[in-house]
Length: 196
Image 1 (cartoon, rainbow, N blue to C red):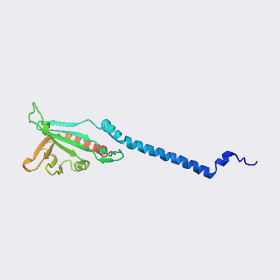
Image 2: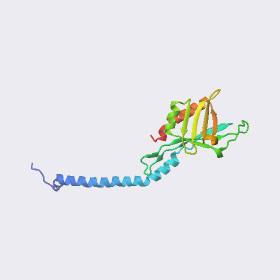
Image 3: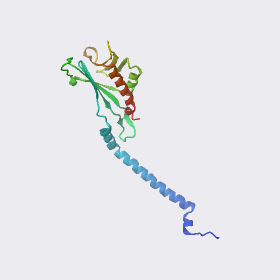
Image 4: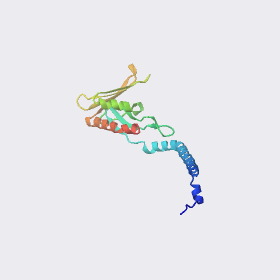
């Protein structure tokens, strides 16, 4: 039986197929560009929303008569287009001196000292958890974080700032269980601080 050369057969020529593919490809590229534009436009809003929704509000705190310490998470900062991390997160350590009164303790949070524990700092802490000695160099206000075994038991957490006669130190004793808990939390927060 002889082949039927209909109009549809003519439309199926290689040139017609290539033209159709080219048209579809052009439409696809335009749609992809539109999606990219939408992502770039929505990126800052998404970043702000993620900060509000996912930023942990929890705080780990230790209140002792001679000093208090509290730790909170500083989440990583994304780039404006929300495609990369502009700045890694950290663990914010805040310490304040106590009045030493076990019955009615109070702490001077107006004179607190802050110390941002970076990802690199956490690596150092986990490497030598029984002998932590981390120095953050600032021109006029250097800070030093130390954790050493206590004289009788547990650990002594200390944070110093300043130099020479202006240097001040805040200490907060931790039990062995408390310090081991802090170490576990630091380790488990590493993926969050680098957005893995």
